[in-house]
Image (tube, rainbow, N blue to C red; front, side, top):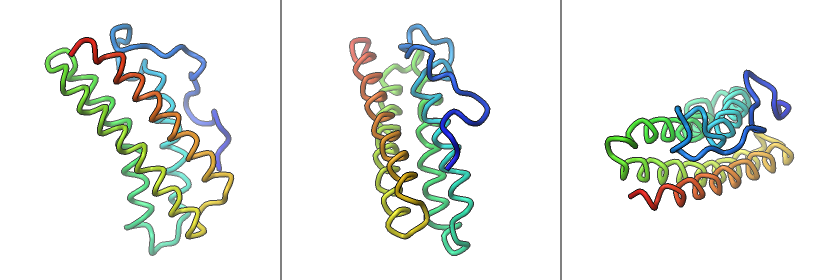
Length: 142
């Protein structure tokens, strides 16, 4: 498992910015956190057995990246169609919960160790909480 904070960026120490203060989806702490863990998931999934590369490994890569993609797409639509941002946040929340299920499969099938599973479980649980907070913060504008 890669060390937390390894990789291209680690700016989780920056404050969470509500969408009104953010110039880009990349300004959102939840995006940065989801992106960082999705890179960990991607790298780890490449070590899964060949039989899983088109199945479970592919699924965890897609689900983990879906959170980031939905944040980016929803953020881009918020000025023209605010309710779309809500819809995309809901999809990102679903993908976060989905990753908790896939992580359990990875553990139970022996593809990741318990420390990695706990880390992913905790990260996705926190990401979902952050997404729910963001959803609540924009609800007054809808």
